[in-house]
Image (cartoon, rainbow, N blue to C red; front, side):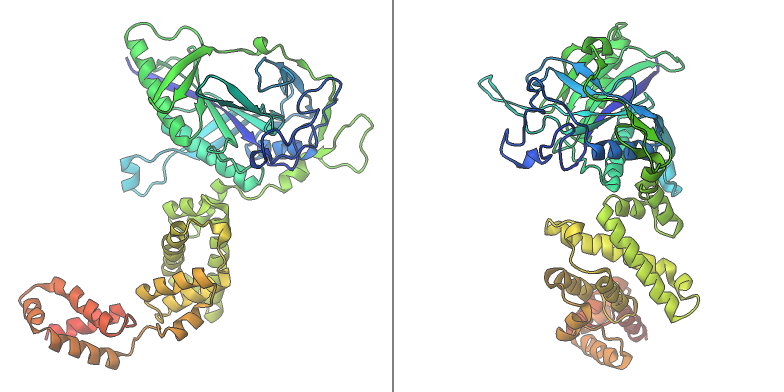
Length: 517
């Protein structure tokens, strides 16, 4: 029996607003001592009234629009009841019938097959439906000790959350991971969340079921919790596919919905409890928060019944270019897809690359008409190679982020120009770049002070090459006998003779002409 995998995700994203969702407490509790960013409202004291965070609602609308959701014209909050020590009110303020957005989607590129890699294909695009996006408050954080006791830090309680529920459109664990990674990137581009899974800013529960290929009905799903990394999501789903496949093959597939936890040590899922439904939470409308109206266009005057004024068009106009669109645009400009993907994975890197690329192009066009088009492929390769591989490697070794880079785009362009014009070879270029990162000095000054400018004077290079040939008669004889790979040895000796300043390409050409006589 061939079985089809059906996966849907429930994702919680913490919003990085200055204050919590329904009170004025600081939203930086993860960096503060336990139980210090709390007040009567977020601790659920009797008689207190919640006041919604306007920025959190605006950011939720922005995210919903970025995920192509339909925005509901009226927003209402509900009470979701459950009894855990991390929820002091014994209910959570959430949204049930009137979420921020519904019926959206996110398009992602699926993993490439071997055939697609060979054909330089970028992979197929899958559209993952977004069932709903709503806003709610986070619960506190529990700490379990080995002696069976539990401590609670209420700093996190009341943090603004958006919950994103996908349709069951995901067909593989790897696709689920790719979807989550793309979603994290969107959150960062929008500026609404850092979305670090390791820090709990982005949390995911995965729902999975199997069904015989060709069937349309959905079978009872299993929800997997405690997934705190992209790798954990992928591995937990892979394990669950194997577990459920065995059940199908034994003639006893899952008959009811259940909740299982992911055990990182054993790399297995463990049964926890039956899965709750909306009826178990006894939802009812939040009586302390009036409805919120959402307008398509901004209005100068707001009706008296309106609690907050939000303009969909205004919020939509403030959404930046998202990573998917940016990636495709870079590919159209001549950047290889793999490089474009690497560049767009970090917003600071993407912005830096765009500025460097634009400056380099402008300088080329200023020199002469058609200069950029004639050298575009070489220029892009130069920019990408030195930026991602060389500069990125230096930052990675120093455990520094692109945000911490102090080299200005103008300085980097000056450096690339030295390479492009042949005044600085690759070996000494790495030396110059490392010193630029360390000191912030201009590349021209470093090259001059350390006498690193590349030597391309043919007469001077010939004199060096003659000295090297005369000093290695045995190697010359072996080369003439057919051991052509020794050309690299001779180039290395000339580079040593020139203290790294010789033009290696020109050296190789002159060597071949001399040795082949």
